[in-house]
Length: 92
Image (cartoon, rainbow, N blue to C red):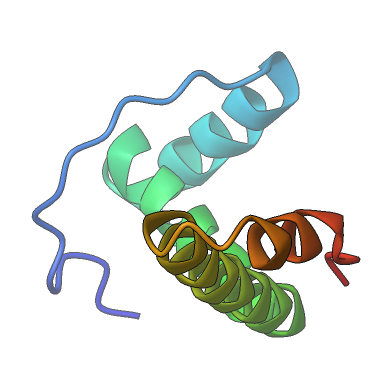
């Protein structure tokens, strides 16, 4: 893995003791040169292993955006019955 490729966004995170131990282990072993690089590796591995979860999250986000748009249209058009129906809809 080219851990330095395309890494230009900085974020701050808080981790628990076990996570910090794992991060520091990668640094001490020489597998990575810094905690930042270790965390980036763990994040990348987590994202790659969570494909199914991320796909479901994407579908849910798209559904929320669609329903939000429909609701805004109904409110702007003063279609109270349509807005009520959207609010009463099962989110699944």
